[in-house]
Length: 412
Image 1 (cartoon, rainbow, N blue to C red):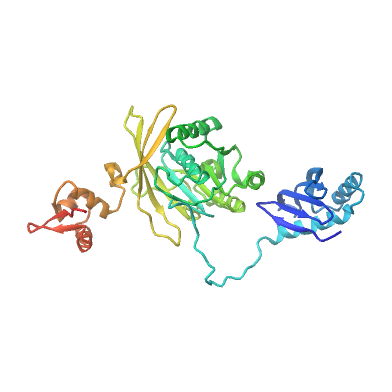
Image 2 (tube, rainbow, N blue to C red):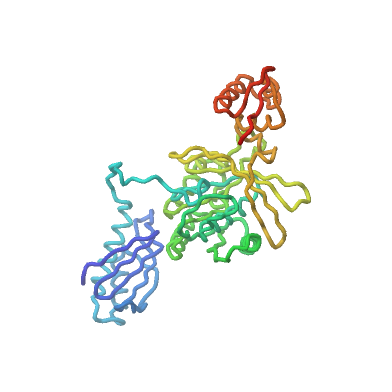
């Protein structure tokens, strides 16, 4: 037998021999209890793209007896092939690849080095864990659906005015919180509200924590070619009895890393929702291991079929600056959902969550004020207010009146 070529995927391998043999290996795992390597194999035989399926089953790559039994079975179907040699080679390569993990590579920091890219700039950074977190019912799941639409079409003229890559990205929605009817309903309302072409969303209802279900999910990611995985939501996917310990977070991110894709994780706010500095529920590891984090805030009057949204950047990627808040207004009916971008400063409830510079600028829209008046109105330190006012003056954003009041400069 010739030496096979080996192609690697997400938790999968494809081995091909010149003689027309092809073995697809998926759902591979090494058992920590005894070191066994197991997986699912599909054995095909035939040339010129006409390879017929001969066998599909679970397989123990570490067992000599299993190899011998399968070789005997396959010899009865295609006697011309030395199946014993084929399976010996397959087991050697698969076990070796699983146990050696990622190879060591040399990094030279040369001109070929490129910065990471955003799938959706600045919401979703490619290849890393991204998190949207907020109170229950804060529109996170709907935003995830909008994000899927933006990357799938790709939706260049999207209602939030965000930059997206030119080529489409396949996604997989993993749902621990709701059900297919709810997600499908949200998707249909988005289609009708914006009159965008319909497209399929790969969806899976989940009940088992990610770490325990990772082999099956790796197979799905590989099968559909997903490059973005939405996880709704973190608490259930982590599956820990006590999310305030590091164990559930470590298990979750260890499993997530095996997928080797971009992830958009939806998470709830910490229990103390009234705290000034809000955070993701659970242990700090959930925050530490994410590379891009946005807090989602919503304002909605009772009985109104519209809401105001603001997304606040709480953690930026190591190579990027903190982004400005993103605002949106959403109107909806049972059949439609329509979004349009608006400045987050449009809604006074959101201004209090912004930096002092934004708060000062917003306060001056109502008229000129002294430094003390601004500090009292914003419940801020007078010295900090004065420092920011002087910075704004140097950039011609405000002006200082003879009576010591500060005014907002008119923009052309």
